[in-house]
Length: 126
Image 1 (cartoon, rainbow, N blue to C red):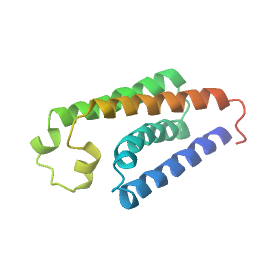
Image 2: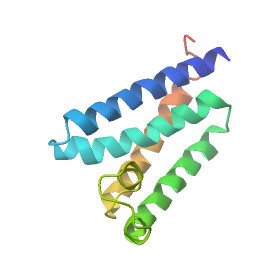
Image 3: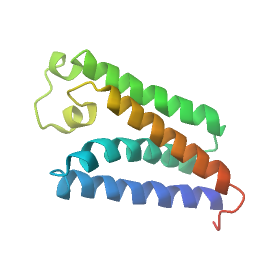
């Protein structure tokens, strides 16, 4: 249980950073798009481990798969097909435009989360 607290703190910190990026740094293209995509997969990784223990590599792969599924939904214009209003929370989460660059960022975020986690798993102060 104490280790989960560290993942929860990490998830909360990443969520706060994502909110700041979305609300205050949206005019910085790279930060809003690329860095935000890297961090969101790291956020999901930490949030999952805050809830329960998972085999780390499988978790990273599952999160990458989920992110790719969201990107595929963008390619298929699912938000428009569902009639989601522009600016609605669900449409913002789902997104509007497919990008291979986003897929690369999701991969990078999953890889960073996995490598940092595996490198520090026995050294966590929590």
